[in-house]
Image (cartoon, rainbow over all chains, first blue to last red; front, top):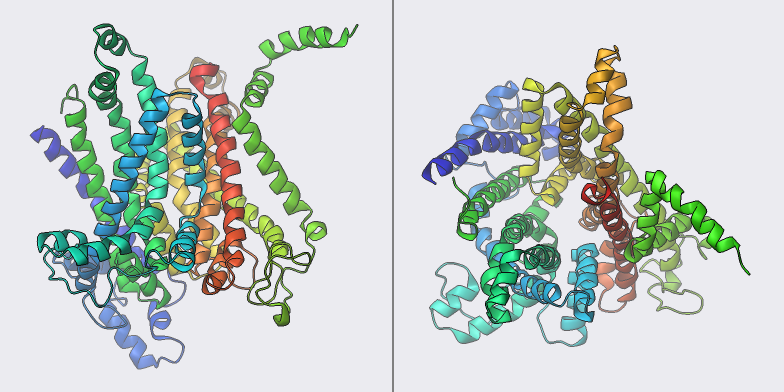
Amino acid sequence: MWQYLVKRLLFLIPVLLGVSFLAFILIHLIPGDPAQVILGPRATAQSLADLRSSLGLDQPLYVQYLRFLGNALRGDLGRSIINRDPVLDELLSRFPATIELSVFAMIIAIVVGVGAGTVAAVKQYSVFDNTVMVGALVGVSMPIFWLGLMLIWVFAVVLGWLPPAFRMSTDIQLQPVTHLYLLDSLLTGNLPAFGDALKHILLPGLALSTIPMSIIARMTRSSLLEVLNQDYIRTARAKGLTEKLVIFKHALKNAFLPVLTVMGLQFGALLSGAVLTETIFSWPGVGRLMYDAILARDFPVVQGGVMVIALLFVFINLVVDLLYKYFDPKIRY
Amino acid sequence: MDTGTPLATTASAPQAADNPRFELLLRLRRNKMAMAGAGIVALLLLTALTAGVLAPHNPLAGNIVNRLQPPSHAYWLGTDSQGRDILSRIIFGTRISLEIGVISVGLALVIGTLLGTASGFYGGWLDLVLMRVMDIMLAFPSVLLAIAITAMLGPSLKNAMIAVGIVYIPSYARIVRSTVLSVKETEYVEAARVIGCSTPRIVFRHVLPNCLAPLIVQTTMSIGTAILDAAGLSFLGLGAQPPTPEWGAMLSEGRSALQEAPWVMVFPGLAIMLVVLGFNLLGDGLRDALDPRLRF
């Protein structure tokens, strides 16, 4: 196991180097002179030369990359062009909001997706099964930003039940501990804050969960159907075990490996997919920060955000691989 | 009395058994979901081809007096904030969406197939380098990579198509590489080599045709998601620019009018969903029909 972990971590090095290189060259994809793009058409020759020098654009590409890599390893992702704040600080201050939204959406997706997929497999070809499968197909075909806006229209505009934007009402006070509002409000025993945070996260969480929920439901169903046809399931039934025990103890655990892979991939995708959802719900996370940075052409922030999210994506995939061992003890590392 | 049916059946039976394409079509026809998907895609193609005839109004010309009109006899799906007919814009938007899907996926298909073939056929350091580059691209969440590329290239429909195309290259390269790896070891490829066939002839005549089945499925599925991704880019202001009647851009424009005129948002969103659903259903059906475990 440890050998495998070390091997995987070593294998991560070229991938991380590649990810950092891709994030680095993004700024060089800008047609023309990046300094001109950043400073605009009215920039003087002197200011352009100064900016090129400060960004290191006047040096050979490999020197620029090594400098970028060295700075990134020290936690320096540059400064925002707009407010001159360090990019890493900005990203770290926004991350709790994105993590909270992604985890919340993932919990909805797993609970509903695995539940619906399981019932659909157990009751194959029933009305419920057909409904779940059609619903899952519609779910993956739906533009998430459109669904978000429809949810706002129905639940915030027409019914007025839920707030359309932000993480919390301005009149609610909350002592920050982890900066995850739901968790902080529970840790500090602040129930009004918990209720308010929950109301705010429901709509974006639901919108964001739709695609992973649909994919998880489909994968759970097909994986479970395969397992339910195995001999050991027939044996378990023949032994007289209850159907509940057969499904939950014998079938579901064995069917979980492909579902887990999908969950890992989807969680990684949620972090980036949150760009659209956060924009619609004015959710102050990394996605929203990236969107604002794109509009303002604040390239260091875009570059830093891309790199940090990609690193997180790679890390999540590693964790999923390691979790395989729990679900399939036959796997030897 | 009717002798035509049994005769037709007996005539078609050996045909189905002998002709794998016919068998494939039969299997596809039996799949109701795939047929529904094919129907939707056919309807979209027809709409795109006849947009000029079908659209009741000019999609770009608006009358500010008619702004944000609800659905009515004159404007079936209502009008937007510029007084333009939403139905006409959706009809013309079909052309743009299909264009996005075909061009971006076509780009990924051509480049991905070339890279995958070179990687699988020649192997060695070329394979190692190309596949590590693909791994790195796959390490990026696709939406984020597309956003980053479009942000850097500048917002336009063309750049959005390029960005989506680039993002899809690795999946094509991987699919083709894995098929090429198994096909190049077969006896008929070896025989072609022995009789002195040139490498391009072996690749294009004997190797690539064997990659067609997975490529057809991947292409059909990708067109739907490419349309969805490009609509997302346009919604963020990075793809098609106003007044282009692209569905994502229409949603972006209609966002500010959500409270007073929800129809501006509802219909373009439904159009996107229908197109993507059509391609997903067809792709699912094709995958089932072409599944090697069933077929070969």
